[in-house]
Image (cartoon, rainbow, N blue to C red):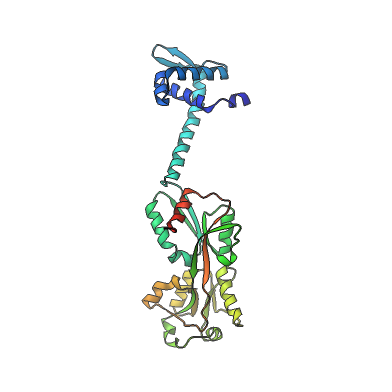
Length: 299
């Protein structure tokens, strides 16, 4: 078995093309070589295998029974190799493949949306898989190879494990619907904010909620939200409907603020800007699809 496996694959390629074309001269043209060279290679393969592969005819060659059995197997393998080459070429040329991005919705809606739109236009053959996850989950997905690119909070970033490609910023704020518009006057202290408005926050467990909790804690204010929800879109809708003041990234509600559906509450102590990063996992080779996406943000 080991002896046969040591036969150079090029000999099998010459055998395959000779059998497929039925002619040593035609095989030589396909291989850009001479007929004697092809004949020598066939003879060498027959010696290594210990049996005759072809009958020599007046006009070409014909497979022996043993040669036909070998050809049937080689044909399958050769076909798979050609398919593999084609698939590899498609991936390199960006006419196929997949790009997996994990990002929190607040970032994706504006900061990355334009890049994703341009990417989809440039490479329509690449399938995009975009997940809305917490920073902790995004880091895990990157670590186990289930995501190609992620956006995580930089204060949670392990610099030895990830490569930072681009830094993003988010400014959190509190917004209310038309119901509370007339109540907006002087800037509010954190304490006044919690007593004057029912607060709508994301559920505990994520980096965004942790960041807001630490903001209130730094001002010695006990935070007791009126509503806790699992998704940003629901928070926005609850605020629009007048159920309280929602804490969201300002960029996430830019359209609602411009249209007058929502109004930002002025704060005496603005919430510190959050810094996030577009990252990849160290040690994980970047696919062509992922590299092309990152290239968009360096232009």
